[in-house]
Length: 379
Image (tube, rainbow, N blue to C red; front, side):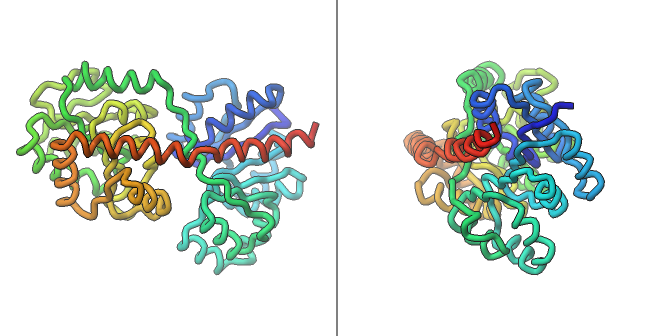
């Protein structure tokens, strides 16, 4: 096992994707320093392996139990702990402090609901917060909430959202366009991304309504969790819809209704092959998912009413006329139909989406500078 590592923790896919450019940046800046990346979910683990491969060490984050945490830290001896977003584990933070491991919370966000919960547990949360050297918050609102739960104002800065700085490889875009041409027969492709239980049935009903007026429509469904692939395929069958799965490697015929993406790590490429995208986790009270990937990839975006996990981004992207928020099933029908019939409207949303992402880039450079200064002091 490597020791004296820079340790990054990214709980799942979204956090992992956001931290990859930062990891690559520090690998260039400190090529002799070994890097450890931990995740909590299998999907997050899969992305770390796929993107960073053997250039980093990767294990799952241990349970927040004193003995286990102490063994973990003794094994890897981190010189720096960098935790993504909202992972405030009391024992982990305590033993980082006990071992003089500088701990940074980056791309930090804290919802109003979470802040209220933490305020009820000051004796549990405040000692951990005191162990964090710096909290790099996504927004001013996030920064203020961290102060309300016990962080010192001097501990908290607003750096912006690292998800604006995502890597989009040119070959990803090319592969998506080829998929649309070769396997989708250049049909009008509506992508339902990162869907959850309860959403697919609504979206299949929307598809049935739209198919009457858009005969060339193809619905591309990407369930958020891989263990639900078979469930979603069965649901399509129950709705008398013809399905082709990505793993079958079959081409879509004209009669194909649903293309089910039963693979991992291909969402960016699939966005690049779509004409319109609906971002899931937003029709049911999950809290939404990342709107910035489809914006950066140049696809018009729709999303539902439940966006509490991305409240600020959802608000601003709509204000910039870079996405459409749909409150219900009928609104989705109208939005897809409108974008199908109005190419200029699609182009406007695409241009505004790309401009919105570009305008807000820069958080990773700020975080890299902060962590670089910490690491330089250790030399």
